[in-house]
Length: 57
Image 1 (cartoon, rainbow, N blue to C red):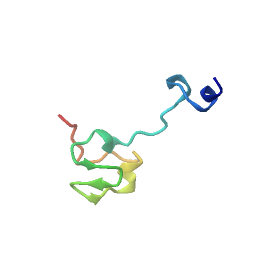
Image 2: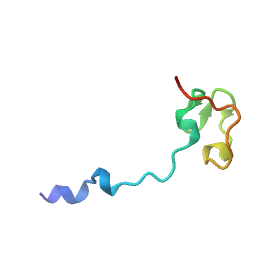
Image 3: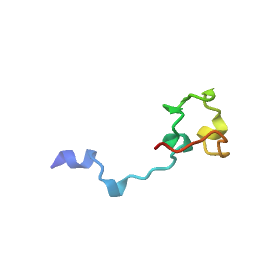
Image 4: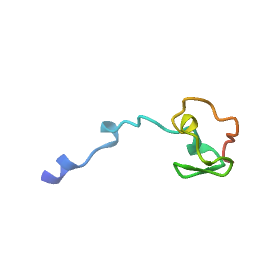
C-alpha cells in the first residue's frame, strides 16, 4: 500500500516533447542520424521541419 505513492499511472504522466526524428527511418537514437551524423538541434527540438525526414515503413 505504501509503495503506491511512489508509482505513477498513465493518467498522471504527460509527454512534453517527442522529436520528429523519433519516427524517421534515418534516426539513430536521440543524437544520431544516418544523414547528418549528429542531428542538428533545430530538428531535434522540432524548431524546423527536417528536409531529410522519411517515415518508417
